Length: 216
Image 1 (cartoon, rainbow, N blue to C red):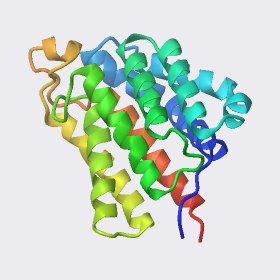
Image 2: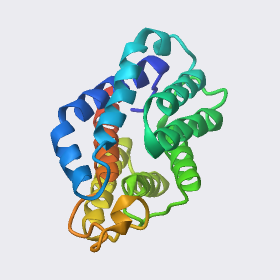
Image 3: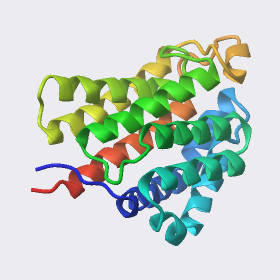
């Protein structure tokens, strides 16, 4: 069995992720209102809803062009720093996957790694700073480790999901280094980071979606 993910497939994943994000507005906004601006969900949801309106256009593009279009769209439609980070992440993934028509098992790692490096560079952040990076880093590295030790793809995708969830959960006890939470007296300790939560939604959705697409 193996993965063979086309632009059409990836856009279907984006639709599923958009649905999960849209369903969790109250919870994410509650988290963000405690230590941040309270607008993380609104902005992220706007970006993903914009992608939904472009479904036909995105599905018709070659994979790298589709990823580039997603990046440009998110950069222009998500407000605040999240737009730059998400948009830049997808633009980096498009560049890393230039000439690739179908994502295989290792191609997914290339996509995630490129997004991670871009978000860390643009945001001047790293794991442990209580940001979306904590979910993305732990998920990506768990997936990488599983592949490198020869795990089957289902186990690797499970590792991606479990790693992301663990990274998100660890933000609860972290002190924020970036954002408005870093100015709070307790630096957000005791609360999950909303960016890590919404990134975890996406990675869990990606893992589940790819498992369903496995070619037996």
